[in-house]
Length: 92
Length: 301
Image (cartoon, rainbow over all chains, first blue to last red; front, side):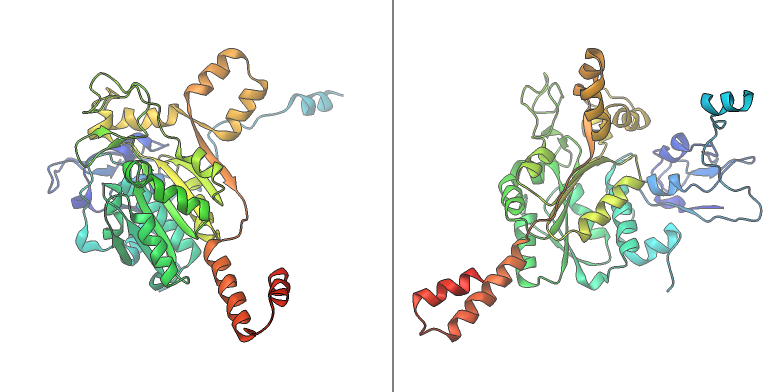
């Protein structure tokens, strides 16, 4: 779950562009300043890495992990690298 | 109150919420530095009554106003001088200074040099945005060559001031430089800097989209933040390239700004040495009638 203090948001969109899993988007309504604060997408892969919370210059985002509904965060999206030496050993 | 895990709880503890939202422009890096400092303070578990903040004049120097702790908002460039007085009056305080590049390198340059030389126990968090942002974008001592400012409309021809190298040469205990777009290393650096008994200097490269990015055609907020990612290089990587890289890689690395921890040494701190001096001399006053020879013996101890 992501809580956003909408009146603090200045609309820099750093959270949206820097999200590693692209889980945020602009919301439809305007806040007091006339900018569109971010919101979570309908189908998102948010893994609660808390990067948006740490990078928000106006401290407007709070990330609260809810563990039951979500899979655990993966360290990397790349497939594991198999070294050449271990392959050679298997062939022998 | 238990352990703080979310930013909401953190803000309630450390933020003066009546002052919020900030006066900073959209996309400014100052607020991010404030949050990193909060996390560092929280992880250290310091008593906020024992922490004092000091700042000079400028955008970055408004940060102590947003913190729910004692702060000193002083004259331009003199934050370190005032903080030295603060430390002299009460050496138990943890003193943290927020200062900008114009404040620290330009107007308060000499205070910075002598605080680093004496190795006074304080943490200087310098937020470097390459320009005097608050007064409308004048040329700062840290503006890169070719940078455009209101007082340098055809490009800067002065060589910029690298304060990390200065602090390192003066023998400051802890010297580091980070950009605001990498969260975890700066938090660790601030923590180490506060824990360090001695002068710690942590520089942040913070984007200034209004006064610097716009004038230098670095694009909108996102592209300006990316510029900081693309034009910085870790000091370890830089050294490796200088050792093993080819000419092309070396040329490229030389143009980039180095980030990382530059110095981390243990060195005697000024006020502990001063306390020792006082104790030594007060010990001497008891044996005031003793000869010069015996005084020399005391000194040797």
